[in-house]
Length: 430
Image (cartoon, rainbow, N blue to C red; front, side, top):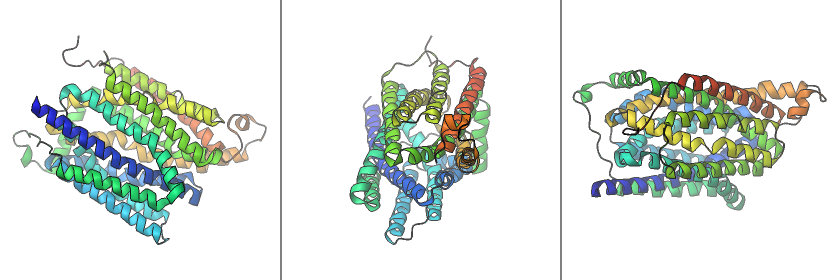
């Protein structure tokens, strides 16, 4: 019991400091998105920031997971955090020299994405090793809670600090949060080693990667859920690409910050529910219903809404139930995958579930810039499209959200049918 309490205390310290560092990183990203959109006026160029982050993350994930299972988790996390800090320092130097260009950010985001490929499976396995199984749902809720707080606070703090002291102050805060998290992980956290099966150490990286893929193929429920989330991520990342184009065109930085803050508040409430509610009878059913609620509300309110109130209501409905979905998915994965396999399987999950994210960002930017905005500019000013979506610079983004809403609902209906025969109840539950 004392050992479990010590591990749980270490996990909470790790979660708290890493979340604080993520707040600083999120503030820098938020300020740079505004800077780039104001500089270029292009949804596609802004979306390329995320494409460059996710492309290496997805392509290298399978091999990174095999390496993560072999390497010391703490050292991997320390090295990745240090690399991210170096990229932030380079950004600061370029900014101070007046030489910062969009391609610099693309390259730096690609380097950060590659480091995240190693860090994510190491962090996931570390959580499994430090958290007792009875705390899996609560710990997932706490992780979602910290993410929600960051989502809520990032636009508020970033906007305020940027207005008061400039971009350099935002980056300096980011580096300060990194220093705290790095010091705690280096000096105070001890992550237990992962027990490996006999002969596993003699296998090569390619063999380890294939073992992860074989495990996923042998778990139909896990595979179906990963493919479901891959399709949802395609829609969600296109949403992320189109959101700045809609809100900055129609409401400016204040509207973008307000809607992001509402998303953070909604996920904060959802995370608290995930941490406090008892385990549901059927976790798969919760996943199905929460995703359907999200996909059938927010995109349509962004498409047809013309006021910040409508956009904020959509944001709340779209994000409120997502932490419940994540918590139940997390329990299913952690309970299905042996700890010694988790790095490889989570890496396969990253590839299968997240490969659609860079595609979605590209699609969202292209749909706004090259398809729907030109279509709206050429449409009849008195026609149906103009009456529904407007004629301003945000009309193309509004039409994009309508298309995403239809696509999201169709995805949910198809996978709800595929998952209807799958039932997951926790061990020992009747």
